[in-house]
Amino acid sequence: MRYYHPDIQPYRSHHLPVGDGHQVWVAESGNPDGIPVLVLHGGPGSGSGDRDRGFFDPRQYRIIQTDQRGCGRSTPHGSLDHNTPQHLVADLELIRQHLGIDQWVLFGGSWGSTLALLYGEQYPNVVLGFILRGIFLGRQEEMDWLYGGSAGRIFPEHWQKFSAAVDNARPLLQAYHTKLTGTDELEALRLAKAWAAWEGLIATLKPSPKTVAGLINPHTALSMARISAHYFVHDCFMRPNQLLEDLSSIQHLPAILVHGRYDMICPMDNAWTLKQHWPEARLEIIREGGHSAHDPAIADALLRATDEMAHLLGVPDRSA
Image (cartoon, rainbow, N blue to C red; front, side, top):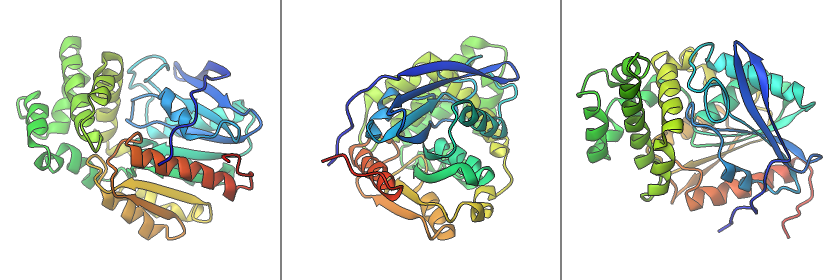
């Protein structure tokens, strides 16, 4: 079992104006002359994690992290104005140009895998390869799984609390969205914490109070719940099966897919479906993995994937 690379701090961070009143946080760490890798967080709306830098050998990679519009250290916090995947893709391209990067690897999990595919399909010539975890394709059946009661059949005690927070209103996703975007700030925060708790309680293979505590932190919970609900009630602002239909532009690029067998947020058949449409990609099904990138077996697979990608791109192995 592999362990994280040593903790490192960014050697440069700043806020980049991207238009529409938004400023996104961008940080660089690792080797300034290494393979550029863009780390895309999930949610939508959760923000970057310091531990995510540990998936990369800092001697091999130039690690770029960004908090997407409205979350993490980006401002304005929780804003839904001019906040769609199309805006996020444009922001990523602006970041690439601002940092003077010709091509980069895309590393993303959950919603981050969605955004990586969206960006790559629009800008395939600037992508070196993909490392994707906990695949989310933005389809209606995936949102029905998490917010329509299917996952609740596995975790009925947690689903009951999640549903009861909006008095069991249906459709539940619309009920949450209405109150999360309403004028009652205290009610919005209460529902944001209920939203975050539901996801945190089912994200890991084994119960993780630390994961739940991190997500229900008011700053994180509010942006994640508001932005997620905003995206999901609008079908992620994508046409049905868009990511699968547009794969032809990136199928020639190296791709490693990592998915936990017992992922309760993004079911295993998401990754399986992507693999069927992208036979050139390599899919690793992690038997002892859930959704979280920090489940030990998932983290191990991601560490191996970053080393393998460096090897595929011609960088000597420095792990010995």
